[in-house]
Length: 324
Image (cartoon, rainbow, N blue to C red; front, side):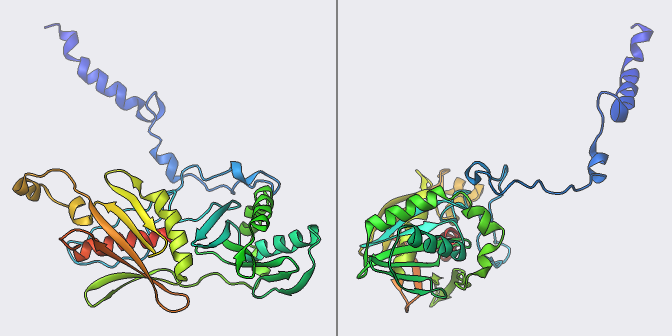
C-alpha cells in the first residue's frame, strides 16, 4: 500500500476540523446565542389587512387538561382553520332555524361605531339608541350588536318584529366587507371605549353521574349555529373525522370519529386482535338547553357499544376547542 495513502484519513479529518468554524462548514450555533431581538416591523394602518397573515401560525391546544395518571396523553392541537369563527376584519353568515345574523371579525365597540355610521349614511330615522346594549331602533327595524362566541368577534342582527330583514343584512355585509380598517381598529384596542363586554366564561368540560358533558355559556341557537360552521370546517377528513349529517330541529350532529382508544392502541393490542387499522365510530353529538344562556353537549355512540369514558372526554375536548 502506498505510504502516502495511509495518511489520507488523518489529513481529511484535520481539514474538516479546521473548516468547522471559519471555513466552508461554519458552525453558526454560537451565533444564535448572541442574537439580539429587534423591534417588530410596523405596517401602516392603511394597508389591506386581508393580504397579511402570520407566516408560521402555531395552533393552540384547546382548554386546560388534567392528567389522568400514567396513561395520560396530551391531546392533539386543533386545526389551524378551527377554533375561530372568522378571521380579523372578515364577515360571515350564520343561521339557526329561521334566525339569520352576521358574524364579524371585530370587537363589538368597533362594529357598533360602524352600525351608527351605517344608519346615518342610509338616512335611517333613529327612534332610540342604547349604547350599553348595542341596540339601534329605527323606523325600518332593529339593528343589534353583541359579543361573538370567540374573542374579538361580534354578532350583528337586523330584525323587524323578530324576523330577520334580509335586505338590511345584505347591506351591512357589503359594508363590513369594504371596511379594511376593522381588523387594525380591533388590534389597536380602540374597541375598549365600547361598553359591550366579551364572553368571559369559556366552554367547560365536566363529569356528572359518570358521563362527560361540555357546558357552553351560549344559548342553544347560537351554540348550534357556530358548532355547525366549525364542524363543517374541521370534521372534513374522510375516514378519520367527518361530519355526516346535522339536524337543526333536534340540535344534533352525526359524526364519524376515530376515538382516542383506537388512535393510542399499542402494537401488542394490534397483534392480539390482528387488526392494525384504526376504526372510526359513528357518534351523535346532542345539544340541549340548560337555562337562558347555557347549552350542554353530550356524545353518544350510535352502535351497540358505548363510548369509553376517555374517548367521550377526548372528543368533547376537541369540540370545546372549536368554540374557544
